[in-house]
Image 1 (tube, one colour):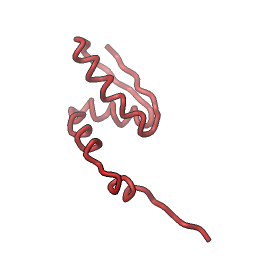
Image 2 (cartoon, rainbow, N blue to C red; image 1 turned 90 degrees about the vertical axis):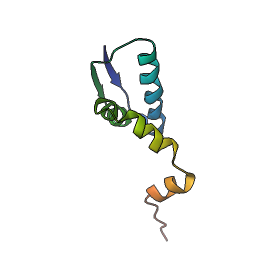
Image 3 (tube, one colour; image 1 turned 45 degrees about the vertical axis):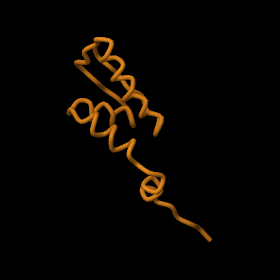
Length: 75
């Protein structure tokens, strides 16, 4: 089965659950493509690191997320 994943920012993380559900249902993904977050999740799946990526993302705290932002205050 070929799978195409869309963009969606942080909401694109639902692709992880979709891939897991497809595999549990017996589908074998042989090709994957995506854009934006879909490309990131698809790439992690393709290189066999999807579970590690899931653990990383679900382990982030609010402070971790704030530190990732490049906030600037203008006058």
